[in-house]
Image (cartoon, rainbow, N blue to C red; front, side, top):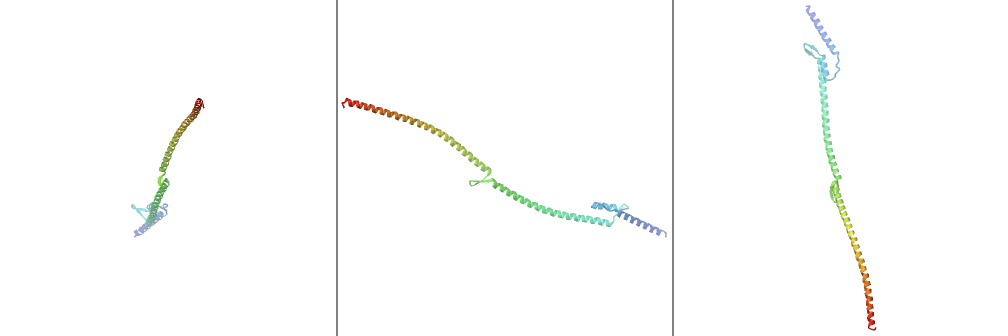
Length: 202
């Protein structure tokens, strides 16, 4: 009969010890709010019993709630990021199309700026410059040939003019001499007539 009160006392002491240890463990607070911190806190706040951990279901449920909340938050963020990535991909594709259109328009503008209409023919600036300089060089050579030819012809004309003047002077001198000779011959003829008339008694 004395064994029963001893067992009651031992049971009460054991329960009191368990409650005190539980209260002592609960008195420590978790300072790390991360999942790893909560898990480590769960392990450190659990009691060892015969090589096993006695885990408080309330703390286990709190850890599971934290895990579930974290997963839902991460999934929500992942979904938002996927949606944002999709929108950005569409935006990038639209921007690429716009850039391609602008590059094509810019290339057309450069081509139009680089083209010049010459005699009804569309030429690039390089071809136009080449054609213009070719024409200028050909015209310059032609002008040089004309100038040199004109100088030669002028020299020839001066020579011919001098020659003509010389011939004209000679002819004039010849005319003067011929006139003088004619006058001399006329006088001589008159003298002979006079002599003839005198000889015939006229």
